[in-house]
Image (tube, rainbow, N blue to C red; front, side):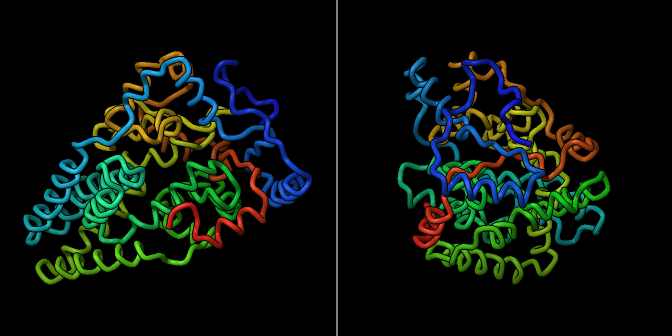
Length: 361
């Protein structure tokens, strides 16, 4: 389906202006749409956030006072890493039942929180200098057991710049995922395997050669993992890695993966969540606000909504990430295809971007 006839909310909240294509882009779009017709294809507009940002800044110029970094982020990251290390120490002689319970609840929640700390730091919102955000991201990555910070930053910047763009936005499932995971049992499996899809999908859709910072990230992570293995054995290392995998699968905090951009209200591309789990996730639930202003730290995102309620209060939003997961699994109308895609960048432009290593190296 296309979005020509879909409701996009009040006129003041309409999406970006019509994209001006040349014949090449139109032909490439038609080819891609024919290959994967199950997605919601936006053939008329750009992503909605740039136009809304301009409208909000015009109406509320004081919002610029919220720009900058949050000085508390580094302390939250430090506390979380220390809790994980203390947990490994306290659980080294625990039964496997107790170990698994803590791995899912505590390690799962904290390690998912650290993925969102890396998200915050990928936008350089944890410190004034870019290099400090880089290494703070590596530090937040440590309890996850798997190197991810540097690669996440490279792909995430393109998710913001090219939201919904075929090939460039690897947050969107592949056509194969949409064709395979079509019913409730299979969507349960898809949710369990979300960590694998999230980490491996970019390697197939838009692979990038490892850069300098990815090599630094891997070196630091492997060294940390070896230290954990030396002192706490395989069980200690598994506590970190399984915590990451469980916390990104069917877990209350992982509901944000689906809640952010899966189409539950036809025509709406991004959704916010205003529940209590924002306390653990650097307010990533304020996702419309975040995409509108990716240079405002999570600690200030509630203030964005407070300053400009007329732009957000009428947008459908969530209060439970757990319910989002349940609805996704049980609703036959929603699946991996429930994403808005577009083609506004030519294959030639995509190749140029790839050849230079992407927006960020």
